[in-house]
Amino acid sequence: MWISVLIAIIFIALFGYLFPKNPDKYLKDSFWALKVHDSKKYNFIIIGDSRTYRGISPYEIEDILPDYNVFNFAFSNGGLNPQIYKAAESRLDATQKPAIILIGVTALTLNDISMPNEQYSQELRRPKEEVLERIYLGKYLNYFSPVSPMVVKNILQGIQPTSNYISIYHDNGWVESDKFPKDTLEAMPFYEKDFSLHTTNYQLLAKLCQQINLWAEQGIKVFAFRPPAAQPLITLEDSIGNYNEDVIKRSIESSGGYWIEVNPYLYKTYDGSHLNKNESRKLSQYIANKIKVCLGY
Image (cartoon, rainbow, N blue to C red; front, side):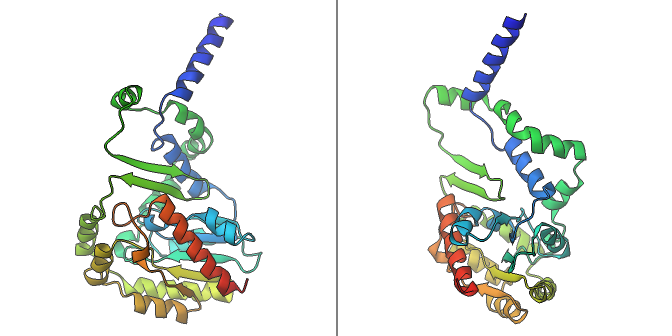
């Protein structure tokens, strides 16, 4: 019996190791549960929406600013409002001066659509036993994540997929992303639909500036930037989305924050809205160097 059990264990382990995995099952669940429920503190916190959590890599920032331990605390449809400010503060170690908060400001972060912070709130409400399962067992269950038989068949026959969406989930909150074939107009219909319902809410900007002023008074350095996107999407945000970058920049700077100018046309997206992993690293290095100069390093 013990020999049979041992053979079964070896067979299952090999099966789990050799067969393809589906990272968008257990690893994805573990990633978001850990992002919301982990209590570890950092002296550099990043907030924003999906263009920020896919677009800013803490690794590059830490390489350029080695005194900082960086965490990407951005979420899908992440709104800039008191709920997320309080959550970011709870993860910020402000004892090491100066602590830093980096904010990706898009037309949807200052928008009524993102006010509920649905992804963050959903994870916050998740039952405790489910959270523990996702955090502690997710990486092990990933070895047995369900994969389509067609995917397995194509791998065994050496057939390359005609399309693929890649997401690699890092414990520092960054999602390393890519997609092929690329379609820089893919995101446009979703933004057009959102902007037909709501546009940039400048009352939320005023509240953001109040929060930045409070952070500045506590000695926290606040930096903000507009995550790059494809030119058609930038034009859409500026027109239908009523996103006025000059107004947002002046408001943030007058509240004690620092605005980092980003030329969106220097960065390539895979869907019009999100940067692939190499462009994300490039942007992260650029922003880190701007912060480094501002800090007087």
